[in-house]
Image 1 (spheres, rainbow, N blue to C red):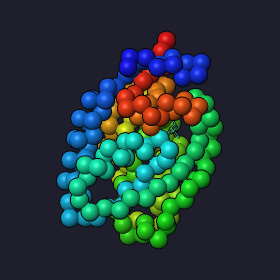
Image 2: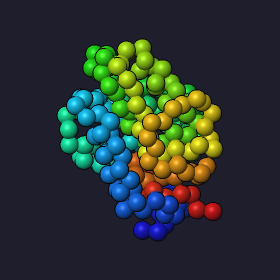
Image 3: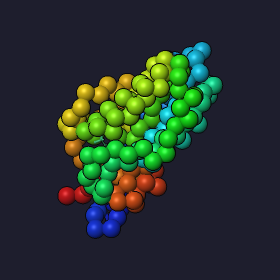
Length: 179
Ligand code: IMP
């Protein structure tokens, strides 16, 4: 599909399904190498990272654990500037472990700054951040991303887990707001 209408906005194709899938293969191979002989704990950041995490983890054919956390900040197309943890972690599973955070997108960096600071209080062995998308032009906080799927300009995007006001998460490709 080339364009999608969601509520009052039209979106056009930005990253195709095959581009996304081949990048995910590369990322998974990098992780399998980096965590060889280890048993990392993946933390999937809901809701946006569910599709990225699902595709990546189906290919991660080595021992690991998977936890979920639900963080919210966005209202419509704007960040509220306040992060809420709506679904917490199984905190006992974090101490002394190698953690891999799977996030949908790093925009201002506020969500990941907040979350990484919280994780550190649970005393993990290491924390790696893997973000499907990254908007470097918007970064306001000092956040280290270990692996980025795609760096993108300052565009509002939907699809592949990302939403516009609750819609659009189900599409297997990424779409940008049409001009
Ligand atoms: P940050 O805290 O500003 O880095 O924002 C991170 C969160 O904002 C992500 O986890 C997304 O849920 C949301 N977000 C940022 N940019 C977009 C976008 O272009 N489309 C949809 N959601 C976005």
